[in-house]
Length: 144
Image (cartoon, rainbow, N blue to C red; front, side, top):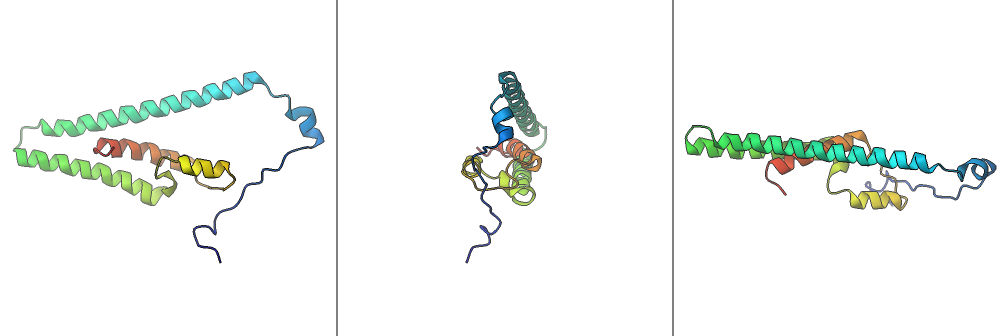
């Protein structure tokens, strides 16, 4: 009897590929192609980190501008706390309802995937979007 959490998992097949086509073409990999792919991945990760930093800085600056408004201090404080709660709510909503695979750092899920356990939504664009936007909102609201 398996639990419902494990009923959707499947193991990946890591059998060694040994056939005529692989022997003729598979072993001749281009070092230039691997370098181009590595460069592309590095640029994509750098742009993602830049977008996270820019979004977090902008949203945090906007929240701090609320404190500079010329309204009574209790209203200032209330607006600041409310904006922090709203940012935290957006981050929680994305993680809980849109893409639960985006919760946590993702290291354990990647290790499970590399060990043969299939996690279907681990590397999807929806998970990436939720992780990036959730990180921006959670850091902007004051969570570590």
